[in-house]
Amino acid sequence: MKIDLNSDLGESYGSWRMGNDQEILKLVSSANIACGFHAGDPQGILSILRQAHASKVAIGAHVAYPDLVGFGRRNMDLSYDELYADVLYQMSALDGLARSIGATVSYVKPHGALYNTIAHNLTQAKAVVDAIKAFNPAFILVALAGSDLVQFAREQGLHVVSEAFADRAYNSDGSLVSRRLEGAVLHDANQIAKRVVSMVEDGGVMSIDGTFTTIKADSICVHGDTQGALEITQKIIDALSESHIGVTAFSAKEEG
Image (tube, one colour):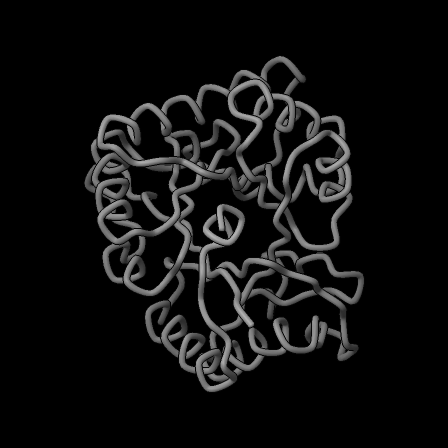
């Protein structure tokens, strides 16, 4: 059995530091790299692209709403044309930087509020899907496992990878517990590691209300900016190894 581990990287901005990208890159198989709209500056983005390429980690465009102040976590009521252009712009920027160093972008993962909104708002989802198809229809879309977006994007001709979150609590309907609520983000490394193994082996986890919730995921996100991120990620890898589960980029499996 194999699973992909991805993490959001390249989110530092100027003198403001976010996460521990260099160390996380040693542990994950896919890197969701900020494109400048919710976080990341050109120099920093190029630097993490070089590091990801050198580490042979798969590279994805972490596209977002234009919301630097809110770190992309505020909902925005953009028109189709606005969102289409925003996503197209971000993919183009990251892909151009990647090509300059001989690296390849293979997938797109929306960030924050955009990710959560298009999981079920198919009007905004269409703008994102159409932008991907226009730029590179071979790009894989990473979407919330069990969301309406998964089937919608597949019907539009995109290859979709379903994603779960290692350190986030789930509601019984498979949605993520709002970050505004207590218990939405988990911090116990051992608990998180056991949940990840359960996602892979059992196809789900216990929800915040104590019921088993089915989550079929091809990729699992580990947040590099949470407290104890490195310890948590290492615990996950150790637990997966003990269960004879390998860590492999989903994009590599598709190419194979």
